[in-house]
Length: 228
Image (cartoon, rainbow, N blue to C red; front, side, top):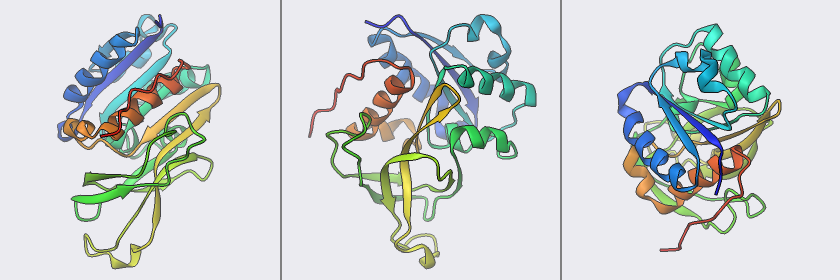
């Protein structure tokens, strides 16, 4: 079992259910031996007692504002080797005016045409431990259209049909859904899945985040996915 430390910082827009998602993943991380701390203030990043020796940070904070000091403390921790793992707007629709934060995370949400729709996740890279063994699967949720860093290692994709949201010109656009990247010495994992807590009732979506957390924390990845 691991003796590593995880930090969840929850808050921002409640529509993404940060507290419910935090509860789900804190409970799971505990089963993997992680010591989990949950904070509801961005000042957690400024607290040396909280940040000392943290192995993975989960930001669950949609929109809102972050101070330069708070963001620098977070960035410095990842640069020094802490992992960063997150999903949907909780990580990549946060602090819209802070481009340094977006540089670190590798992307920023810009639209979800049609809102909650049925769409497919595919192109799952079998060479990545985060998506190995997973097959294309369906979601009924927000299909994120994003601005993304070309340096990301993309390991899952989705394709827009152009049938939703009155934007037919995006038909055929191939968009990253899961990526891995580095920020200094730190591993960064992101997936656009997970609009609300129940989205993780889709076993593949839950599995991807569980593996992403383990990868970012430099843990041995233990696959738990069982094909339905």
